[in-house]
Length: 264
Image (cartoon, rainbow, N blue to C red):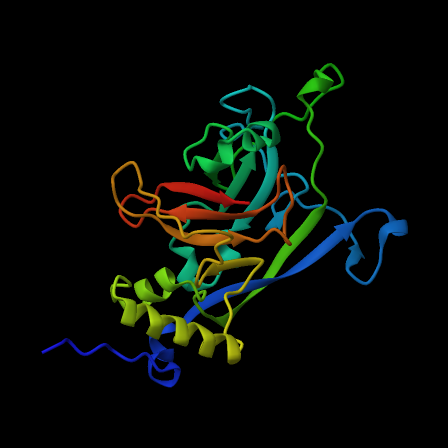
């Protein structure tokens, strides 16, 4: 007797598909009154704030980094504060600040395809350490890198998030094999029902939830061989550096090591 194909009706599988994600309010800031508008407020940068762009907190233990490939200064991209995050997300940070830097040139030349590229740096920084020495006039101007405009990351809130309509993603979410033609047809019908119900994968900046893959889903294994999970997403509408795209910071559930994936 042929094995009966499972039917995936949206009303039955919704609880299995929904994940909680945390999204923030993004506040663009400028110190130039001429650039204030409906989307940008007047203000000043804060090196200890959670943000995209601007200036990071630099200490003697965590100074301004250089690219491990071309030795040029890395561009500062992201800084998160553990104490600002929802309790469920704080477990991914061992120190108060999480920082992301990368090299525009090396990322554009294939570094973005390598989670362990030396053209990027993810590090955690403790507060209360002695600050790095400020640059003086004698410092080489070639060591400067233009800062991204400042966007503060505030007020994280919990929202519903849904997987994409890709058959492989839905199959993994429901823990079924997509190899059967009948199963694939059921998953495709489920994807259409989700589209009709406007159940989408959130773009932009978020923690947890479902990754909004630009192309095919990716699996990254830590150096300890455990499968890493995306915990922070930076959609291309949130930050545009190099060739743009969407970036995820990944965390290893076994050893806590961080890596990243960038899809363009």
